[in-house]
Image (cartoon, rainbow, N blue to C red):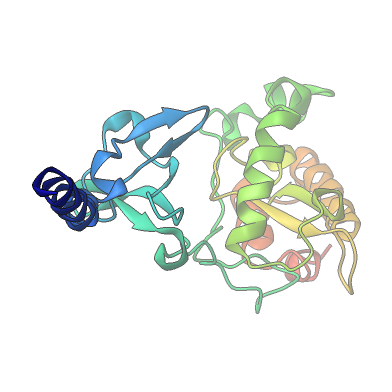
Length: 230
């Protein structure tokens, strides 16, 4: 009888102790951060993250999504819903069909001067030797389409154009001289091409100085010919 009573008490004692132990050791306590494929598991919200995890995504023990982002001088795991997207729009479209002068004031190729035009811009085919690659201009075009805040992000709808054209010694690669000019609208990119050709012919013929042609087209290509009497 005593032996059965002691056994019953032992069972009752173990039943009471079991949930207490489980409560003292939550499942998340044993969760250690580790990488699975391209993301991380068991991240701790707000905790510092290693260099290898920078800009990577991770999930907490409760399956919430986080990202390792820069927080001041350190990197921490932050909820993806509260990570602000970088502001990219910084150029205004109010100047169309001209670029924003703060973003693209124009820039020159130092190799082209009034004294060198006969061996540079006035030589047939010379612009091909300085024209940047399509891969370079397409990458810049994508970036600048965002900077101008265009809703239409189709690159084929824009010409990455030189404000001061290569035909007048404009800088080939400077972001201050290249911008995504719309292919359609009241003054599309093709209209500027004809202005560029007429200005180049005038400069090479000695009718207009290089400096005057550059200034006129950088200021406002739609009025450049009229300003120079061409």
